[in-house]
Image (cartoon, rainbow, N blue to C red; front, side):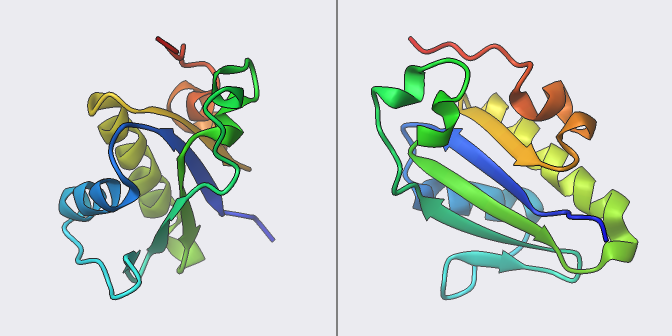
Length: 125
């Protein structure tokens, strides 16, 4: 069985609520009472990272696991894998366009832009 779970670590001055609202608008889905998005294809949960550490976040190459926020994204309907992966790509490209630093960790990260962000240079200034 394939694992489609994806965790996107995000470094941004935006709050997790602001990120959730922007992604909600981008995908044209309303946030539920738990600030999550659920569709027939995917679910997205938005979190503040309990492991956030500003000093460790700038360490290369694994500092991203200490970014302040993360998104948990999972598939609902595995028969819609292509559509699901396109949503993950769209979120990543959008967050980059908003000036966020991010890295996506998943079993399919090699199919994502910049290999999930691992090959995207991160400006820590």
